[in-house]
Amino acid sequence: MTPLTRIKLATAAAGVVVWAVGVRIGEERLKWAGIAILAVAFLLRLLNNRHGAGFDDGSGSDDGES
Image 1: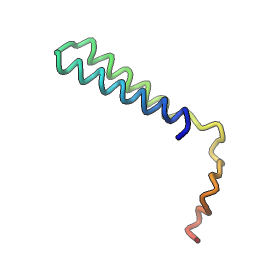
Image 2: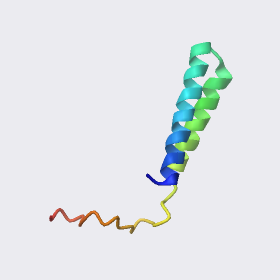
Image 3: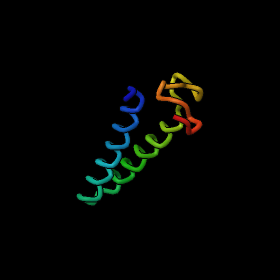
């Protein structure tokens, strides 16, 4: 797992936790903060890996042949 993937997952998890705490205690600001953190996590998904779209991980061909 790459460091960027870990950051993406941690951000999404933090957003869900903050949102859930806001729902649990009935605090609107925490709910909106959790939604904002989840939005940031979604935007992080748009970042490409350093290797770019043509990155080959060596796991084999993508044409369905073994």
